[in-house]
Length: 420
Image (spheres, rainbow, N blue to C red):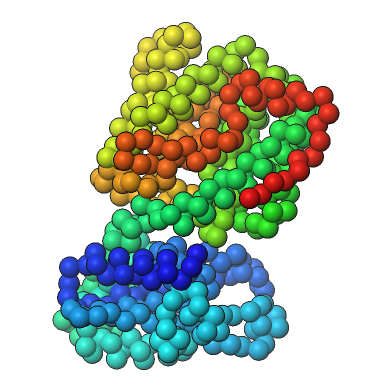
């Protein structure tokens, strides 16, 4: 993203606050030790990242505002020659300025953070923190500093940021579309290589190869590769079963682009052909997926979309004599049809707020018949507009005819990637 994006986000956040004089303090987060000399991969606080573009741990954003102007400051770790030899490059002040749009003269080192905050607290008593940021120690540090006097007012900035994140800007939409394009390439490679007597993890590896081959190192989440009865477990994660003839395999996966997630589910016949029963259930799910895409629009709530999906699946199952009454659908469909998508796969979302224009949500109805060994989910990513939804993943094939036609190629060749 260009630094203008982060400048705009900070300006919009300032405009959302009613107080005249206040300070906002956010942290990027800390690294977590995994073992004696190894840390877990660092996951930045995405609210901090949304306002700065900085992914580096141990960094802080401080925004001071009065009735006339605001000033943003950034604190980052100072260059350390020994650290760089062992663990890699840390941002310089100029690099951090180029990314965030914060003036280089307002970028300081982390060891100056406490003194800087104490000086600010002498003048400003309204303090905004991200209360949802539970796994970071920043909030307790600020509360400790401000507790020296009892006239501070500490407020939550979380909902203000989430409201901004709910409606995507054009650059965010373009980025998510790129993540979807790469995800599609990975799914094509999966279909090209699917065959009986592989293991789930072996077929999964063809997705991973494509994603790394196009320059992406991050998946949106741990891939679900669930064949046969495994697909009836919503968050199946073992991915170690043998692929059997006449079984389906459900993939729920996606890759990231500049931190933004694609989230796609597709269900394929391992041998390239759906059985008649699989077709019957698959088409019920597909019809519901298409219905949600047709009715979704700004002003609706996720709860409304969920009811439409549930009714559609129940009607389809009743007609196919898969259930005896409408209430029985709860046994075979037990998750939500939609969630927000963005920097997080399940992007934070304020449920009481209707869908805004340019929200991006999932569309993922499913049916899970454990007794039949059949689990099917079809998930697309929808861009919400004023009177319609645009399917950002419409290029990813999902009809029975298209899937069978593609998988029946007599000479399957490794995909030639065409990444725009």
